[in-house]
Length: 132
Image (cartoon, rainbow, N blue to C red):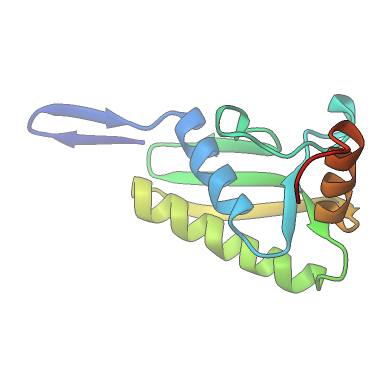
């Protein structure tokens, strides 16, 4: 995005838009994680420094298009979750950048089964005497 003002130009990088979209996606109920795609192996939960995994953007001067690859939680209504995801990402990017988001494409690449229970079981295996 470029905007001429008295002091000069403002440009928002693709990485900034990707980060905003990734964070908004993870805040959407029903989204378990972002997927790095088949080439990156199993889907991994994002950390703050890796928030762009599963997000591709094209940013022009006034508009942006966003592609997301996600893992949804088992039992969620995929159509509703994805619709909410599209709206959350669109709102976050438009509000923070001023860009017009022309499309948010979502590809569901997997379903997570009882994710939190599995994490607890893995912790118990590693730390069997941990206080609960």
